[in-house]
Image 1 (spheres, helix red, strand yellow):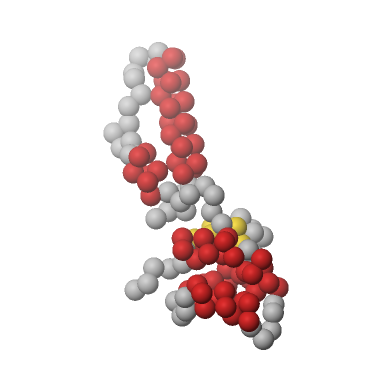
Image 2 (tube, helix red, strand yellow):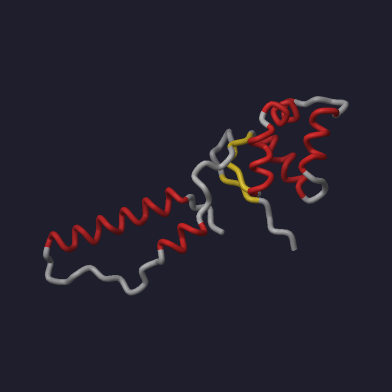
Length: 123
């Protein structure tokens, strides 16, 4: 899986279409053809959703460290009943659906940087 979103794939397709259109409308004598054209439908299927959950970096670190060691309910329970409530745990409680979506997808966008983070596949 790449870090491309579905919109990225669509934009690449639109650029390709524009190049083909330009080639045909300019009538340069040689039609546009590329032997190694990508299969955009395959790329689209493999691309990440456009609406990735956006979570703070500190919350992402909690998600990353807890993902292989506990389950989602355990993290939510710790956030709710933990003896020390941190800003990150408070964020998890206030944004449980967003946190759960990131947990299930295994991918999210970092709020502070816009970077896409993916959990490593279990080996």
